[in-house]
Image (cartoon, rainbow, N blue to C red; front, side, top):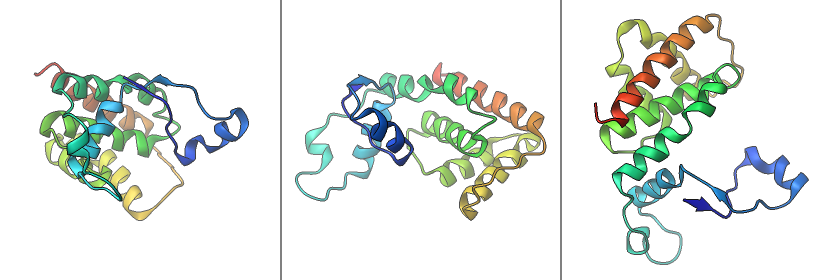
Length: 160
């Protein structure tokens, strides 16, 4: 799928410098549409379910895993958000529901072996506490956790 415009504060500097974006490929658009359909809320007009078809499951899976390489590349610079995004992806593939970062992390914590729980528990606590400054003393544990969860995501995407 492609999108014509996406706005987020993280894009402000780029838009101010380069102007409005051009249409581009957006594999995760399937996730955004699914979120809109699950919420089915409007400010004005008909509910989304009257305007949008449900996203086929295979498209949702493709959209969910499309960003894994970039996320892995950002692991050391945006650790908390990457770990929470991995939790959301795994939860979505396993449950079909797109959950908030903290709810997804809670679900994943119940499905992790004990040795991988502390990393995600810390990322979730940082998120809930609004802690922006990231200090991860043990990036080895972070990488091991990420490898475990990404493997679980890939297994889920293949249908186990």
